Image (cartoon, rainbow, N blue to C red):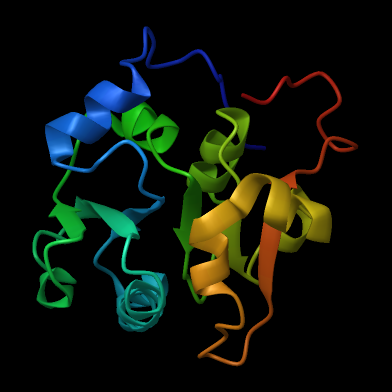
Length: 178
């Protein structure tokens, strides 16, 4: 079983400070992808989703983090902040409004658990344990997702159900999110 310590990686930098260091205004919506450049992670789907979302919302920014991802979605413009491996992933998660997972296969993705433990909702393809750990709650789509989610709504390029929501608290009753 996977476990996540929501306090690991702390003390955390302030959200505004992280965004400022990346050149992202504090009032802009931010989606985050954390992974690696591997066929299982479906980076072409990520690129397609980000391209559509960035066209739909001119204020949206995306942070893309992981091994082999330096510049991968860079052709999408200056609102995509593409980075390699980072040691401050918890800070990047907390500076984001929404996590995106585009994998075509997973077990129990730690990054989804980590994001939701830090209070950041997730949009994920229906793979592995995602349908089990993400509580699909339409109310959360608006309460938690806000503007970034509106830009992502209706996207299912791979004909896979996209789960949107927060941590399934029935499965993790002792965890305090956020």
